[in-house]
Image (cartoon, rainbow, N blue to C red; front, side, top):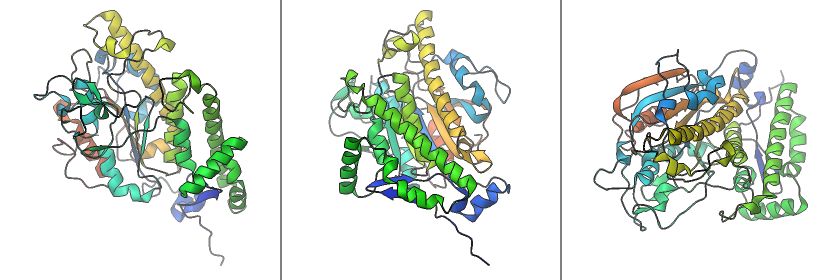
Length: 450
């Protein structure tokens, strides 16, 4: 009897410093083949992923919070773009970040909101090098399970970075422009350039060879797929019809994303505020979405299972003329109950939710067994401030998207009691990732109804 041929899960297409991870294929293990044959979903067959998407300056909470709880609820204005995905996420009301409050340290809510969002710890008030906050939940997970993927974690931002100096009432800029912390004093800076993210995802492991091959490819205007073409051709001879089709679709998506980044580079000079403008799209919506595309590819190929994404830093005063909001976001957040300003805040919130809906659609477009990539994800979307006018840090605007490989209960609005630590949610997520942790920051126990 002929021995079945199986493809190792950690298989890559290689060539001249390029390295392209593969999506989940039927040939990768017996479990995968049984799934394809209709044996049903198995949480053991696919890895669980988790991500955290940060939005700044709070939200117009009246237009964010559904009136009804449970499964029969209507989405308010801000969340309307997510209507096609209402069964794929939970609205979690009542979570709080006490350590984002002053607690005797005075002003600086934007810096504290970012610093505490994933750590649940009080940031030391300093504008110097003696920064201190805590280890973030993503890095707790990366420390335990990052060894199973090529990248332990992926940190992204669609916002310029400031790494030194004071940014918010005596707080170091490191607090405001980072949400991921490897140690209590070491942030993990997010990458802002899509081109560099792309190269990080698809470059080989030899740094010297990678740099040389990247330079050669860019000079010759070659695609990264040109370097792995022979390897791909050899692999396709061994794959079945379904896997060949899936591989073709995946490689096409990689090339389309590469082309989008190349097109954006032609116009990058129009963004002088960035130190490294190469690869940063001129159009803000395109910028936000190309980063979501990169995160999707990273999860699809199991290049990493943990990611963070800062849509904009807390305190950002970016205007949004593309949606008719010419004023700065932060200025508007101090609305003083002016209905016109609150309406414009809601429009910005609605715009960000539209981009998040795009991300969910991308995740749902990737099949995994009888389900989709989103079914095996846990995606937190929200921020560390609720009402930006008063800098509230309770009843935070928080969504939890994905099925967590069947361990979550999406399609609901859940209203918890007052002052439930946000970090209790993180403990519950770590547990579902197979990571045992006694606490995260100020957590008091795992959030049960999630």
